[in-house]
Length: 107
Image 1 (spheres, rainbow, N blue to C red):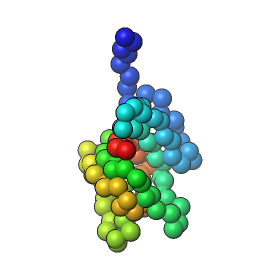
Image 2 (image 1 turned 90 degrees about the vertical axis):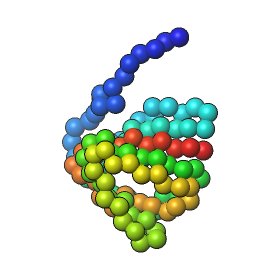
Image 3 (image 1 turned 120 degrees about the vertical axis):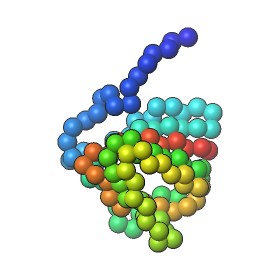
């Protein structure tokens, strides 16, 4: 068994011109975990995520606003988490200069 401790904040790129960076931390069984680093990111105009599985997301650092096709808007800051059920259409309206998310997807 090869156990090695890693740090969720290691290897972060600097600079707001990078948009969004996604690092898959785990993709096993029916679960996928990603670290997402967003730099002043927003979803493209008219684009909605419509996922086949549930998504649980937490903001570890920074802030973000999510919009839902239902018209609802949710503001999130460090420590806030949210469960987004499958096929609930949503998009990123805005993130701060450096927002670090942890996203857990169940298939």
